[in-house]
Length: 230
Image (spheres, helix red, strand yellow):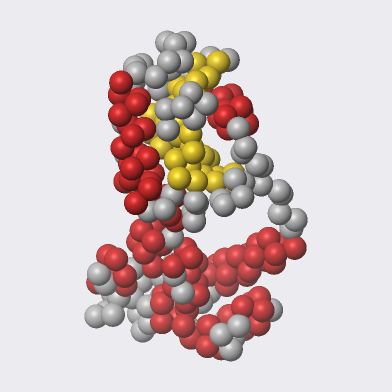
């Protein structure tokens, strides 16, 4: 691995492609940075980002051209052996398949019942509390659902900053908080109400709507929206 003055290991952590990917998401990296992650490492004379830039320039800065590169083209670059060439070609093959694969329709969430059905099978039989977030777009279509935290028998930590950050990264305009009560009592406690209030206020400052807070208790659920608590 190249360890000269321009080695990636010497860079600021926030500028290294892998760390940048984790912090900001792949959509905020350039093609050469993404390609450098696939390459992994350069050689003594050149680091992975510089090597990726050479390959990208050779492809005319065009993904369609890069996708047509075979092993013979990659072998022209010092630092690209069979393993790295195959890794790049495999990624390009996956990209081609993703482009032609039909995208499944996003489920619509228009009621507390449809929202609860998204997570209830995962939460109804747990012996500990978990918090999940449903991320929705402007059409109330479900973009993603994600477990935010897992706690004890009677409580779990709700990190509002993480929720808002992930909602913004997903470009969600609406969120639904879902958590379970292992006790079987679906009524909200004072802590549930306070956390809901804080999350709603934080979301509003980022133009994100907290559409509901649903408490799952076995086969039953409680909706803050249905009960006028939002």
